[in-house]
Amino acid sequence: MIRIQQEDFDIGAEISKLRSGRTDIGAIVTFTGTVRDTAQGECISEMTLEHYPGMTEKELQRIEQQATARWPLQGSLIIHRYGTMKPGENIVLVITASAHRQAAFEAAEFLMDYLKTKAPFWKKEDGPDGGTWVDARDSDDDALKRWETRRKAAE
Amino acid sequence: MIRIQQEDFDIGAEISKLRSGRTDIGAIVTFTGTVRDTAQGECISEMTLEHYPGMTEKELQRIEQQATARWPLQGSLIIHRYGTMKPGENIVLVITASAHRQAAFEAAEFLMDYLKTKAPFWKKEDGPDGGTWVDARDSDDDALKRWETRRKAAE
Amino acid sequence: MSVKLLYFAWVREKTGLGEETVDLPGSVQTVSDLMAWLKARGPEYEAAFDKSDFIRAAIDHTHVTHSTSIDKAREIAFFPPVTGG
Amino acid sequence: MSVKLLYFAWVREKTGLGEETVDLPGSVQTVSDLMAWLKARGPEYEAAFDKSDFIRAAIDHTHVTHSTSIDKAREIAFFPPVTGG
Image (tube, rainbow over all chains, first blue to last red; front, side):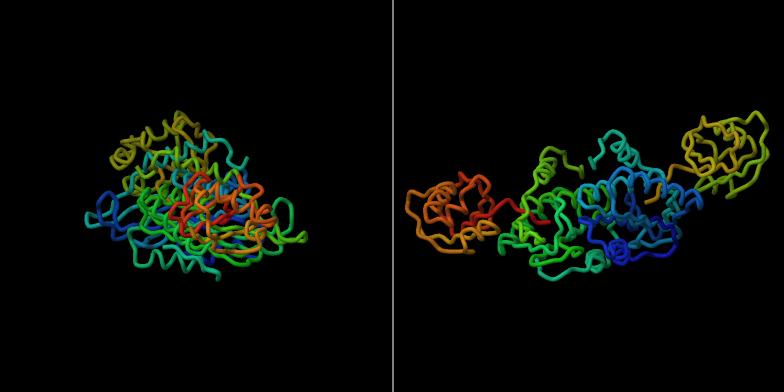
């Protein structure tokens, strides 16, 4: 399941929905990305996320399908917000559920790494010096590469 | 923070408590371990977790301190239940919060790997053939070893 | 060929528009050709596509490289490397 | 030496008790010695410590190996490999 929305999400409620009535799940991993009040030493008063409607849905679905093909997941969810957010607010939620912990952890990391480098979102941070578009980080590209070289974890 | 308790926990409420009033967190990872209805092909009607009061607290604290020393965490929580639980119920919750996602993910995995191999809990599964003590898994010992060989992630 | 162009983040801010539809000459074959053609359209475009190496493109909602052919493209988007999550 | 012993999981079920306090002869120096001494105490203990290689021990709430000295131990626990989480 993927969702792209302006409004906030409730992590606890999303976990409850995903596991509801299930007794075959042994491990649930969640990742929540939140707005920090500083970046590169600068204060941030708010942040705006622009995205590419149409392509975002397609990319998130593609990323989720890849994770589902690679790990035995009992459920997964990606919610990504767009619009203006203040420090402390939620930006993104990833949930993965599996029989065993390694699959759930790896799938969640995989989803986040792909999301960071493939999903068409752009961050603009507003601080005392005005707005600045956030530069992509090389470390995010590096994070992605490990999934290309690594053996399938679920095997 | 660590807690050992018989009663269930509320994942959403625990996340909210941990991040409350904070704007320096960028990444929150949670791991929830739950009771599965099958193990090695056998049905499980319920599961009982025995533990070693006194030592359990000490081990969990030690494990949490190791994670805190190794990764720059803004917060962490381990809750482990004991007593009798039915399929679908929560067993364990680990939460880690950091500025960046890699530290949060790695610390959560580290906590779970140590918990699985060092915390004095023992599982007994009840099914149609009566109760069976769960054997320790070699894969859990293997999971632990990677933290001994791997470079510090936060560097 | 008539194609819809979309611009995001600082590419959008520099061109001054979010989308437009253009008629392309037959000589414009690849994403790279298109960026060069756009750059010659005026100072806003020149500023937007100045560091074209840093700009990413998508054709009909799929990431592509600069050497990808734009043949049969209906919608082409230009944007900086993504920074969501 | 008087020391408190604790048993968990199937070690507890086999000995038939969760804890006891015993007086140890001076010849019992290590965890290994203690398991051998316990094994000779009766059939329940023999059953519990039959596969002593599989049994883990903790002295005063800290994991130890079979060769660890029990000198100054106040509480010694025996249990199977842990299976929490």
